[in-house]
Image (cartoon, rainbow, N blue to C red; front, side, top):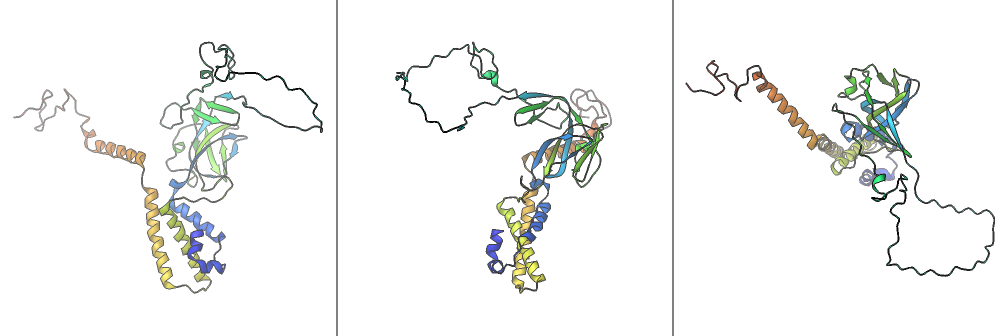
Length: 329
């Protein structure tokens, strides 16, 4: 917005630029760029009486899972906490200082190897106390049919979910991704989204949700994508709206300025969409796998019905079968 005001200094001095009117234009640009600019977030929701409030920054859901059994790891607060509390103004009594103690800085301190470990309390006669406080490795959440393990890190404890169950979502095109696996899972547990709430057919439980968040920060302030080329798209979209407001207010606007802003707006929109929609390496690899699978299905799978002998298909071009080696006639 500062760049726009810098280019339209005359209009800014006359208070013809309304910043509140630019919020909806910025939201429209974010929507035009698509979901690829939104941040992927996750949360564990506590279902009570068959419903739970969705996160405030919820935009669309990627997938959901029902959390079952879990183990809890609690951590004891560590460190030194010092508080200075003045009860009454007391004059300290005179005390004689103790005699100085001569310590050799080069002499290593004596450490008892059998002292109990501070973390777990077990004696460490053979090794240091470091290994007993190490955390076990945790598996990451995936949706490829493998074993799931969800780790929820709270303020004073960590919950490791060992049982996750599928949850079937009823169709709601506005708030569910088209490739969401919950639309196709067969499960007796169902749920649906309505008016910012998640309703379930079970009364209580925990639901893990992976979703795309809104372009807002924790305080609800609007956020935009910071990119050198995409910022020009935001800039000229705002300039286009300002000129439109000036025309509606019967303010004199140069036709050359209108044509220039309109041309630059279309160019920068094309550049921004091409940058956002360019696939990354993992997406290109997945696309290559799909194309390869499609080509195999089109040109090679038709021969699967023939017997496979000796590493060769025994069907010859003349219609005769041989013993696995092509023969010339």
